[in-house]
Length: 187
Image (cartoon, rainbow, N blue to C red):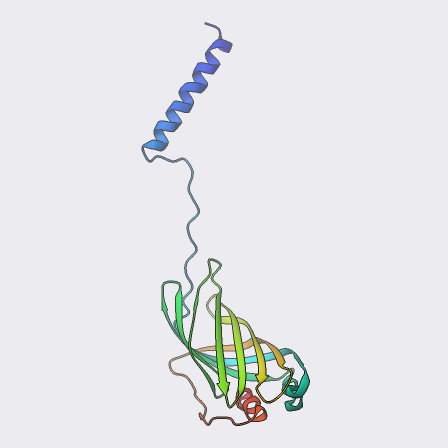
């Protein structure tokens, strides 16, 4: 038998052998392993730098954007079970309890929190990463029942410390938009 007539039979035998090997659990390639889930559990504190801000309407009278370029304190207290993270955070002395999120396949964690105090609503969104130290960004949307417009604040974590306990400020309830802005700036 010529070599050219034996090639199709050889190819068929190879295909059958490969199928049998795969059916028996054998594999000649390795699948990539899932990356390790970062550990967000614990207490963190530090500062974020206000990197962007715009405001409109009556909310602009509080001059929340006057803090542009300054540093403001934050703190986190997180518990974690696999990819699920729950806990709370503070911006200055303003509490955002009962927050939670799911760690993405890329290791990122998104958290949302809302504070409603005396008709003033602040919605905060964190986009966090933890590669040995917490990093990320924060966005805040400020609105008032009594005033038109809103303020949009953007910041970047500038310092982060993993601590055994959280440094909590006084928990006096701010009564005005200016008081709330002052409380969140940590001043």
